[in-house]
Image (cartoon, rainbow, N blue to C red; front, side, top):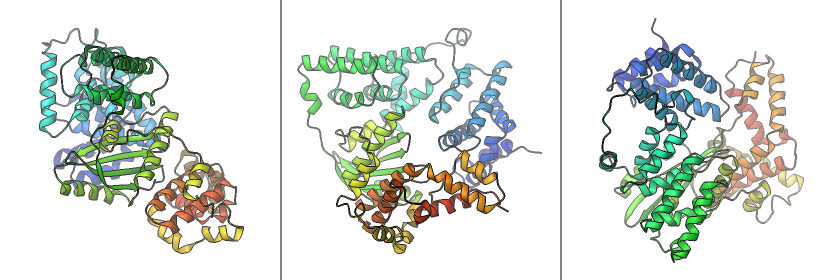
Length: 522
């Protein structure tokens, strides 16, 4: 009998990653693949046994790592179990002498690409793992030059170059990786200045310290570009107190002594932004912002993913050859979720709050956000968390909702045309946590389950009030005032301890949670 892992690998090999056949197969099988330790072991063994030209097992494993990360972030089932099973399977292969350094480096790169910590078992020991490997060390500068040329030929830039190096070094212990990056930054390569900033944002503390020291040396030698120097005060605000931040402070003082103070306020070409769109946050707090503009005659599309508890989760800039290409990219993004046009002030408010949210939870912004800030002239953004009252005041500046009578507030909450129009923006709002799944599975009575879900939501008032207000702000910017008012009224009711059953939007969340539970209640 063919196992589920072999089945998926067979479909992938026959039809390819982007095929409808494989996408359908993976969607149906992914939860079983995450939950099945035998399937996990089969895929890991296939990676170890694969030839250089056979990347299918690596591809499938990378997809599952992404699914596991999302499951962990969203309190979903199987994510943690899959990572534990994967480590056990890798350990078995290494114990059997099959986990060659090259295989371990590739697997470590997949963990890094998925945004997951690289397991210790994949870390290479420079002495034990590489001593017996016969290899001729190439000219390092020449190798990087070739790699940079290949990235450029494929339409990539510094970010793609950085991603390749970052994944390549994912299996190095932190001290070895910091030394590797420090050496890389001594080389003459056009991509490396921006890569230094990416590592400064995303690297571990030792890497950040090495990067700051490397940038200081470049400044002393007089070859630190003004574009790099001007980014440092912004990045400083994203870093915790420590050696790296102290190093940036030293660079700033040195720049002032060298008469480079004007670099930090220099006039740079301003983009012409033609369109800003945002999706409303989904059930797990994820939302996207898309910015279309032109900088120095080149059209670009900046794409940003925000997520509650993680801040700016992903961000990158696509340089387009034409307006038509930009329109095609934006059109594709719109198909993925409902989006509305918003103004620049609203986008900045969302981004500043996301920066603060991420920093508070030790999640600095995605490295590509540096490119977004530069392309969109957002250098003035600073982390700024806003409490619920500040968000409510923003969406209700005349305090029409806050000063409403009980009868007026009830009419706002029960505005049926507005509630109907909100459905496309709120139909993904439901609770899917370990606790709610346990509630749904733990009782055979519909009444008991529903009662427990209502009780669970009492502890989630602030979370949903913030979700309502963030969405209200977006819809107000999009000129959907009636919808915005209904959401803000619901948030106000949550904040002031109105009974949950009197808030129709919360009732919708309860019903959708029960529908999404996937368990028969009789």
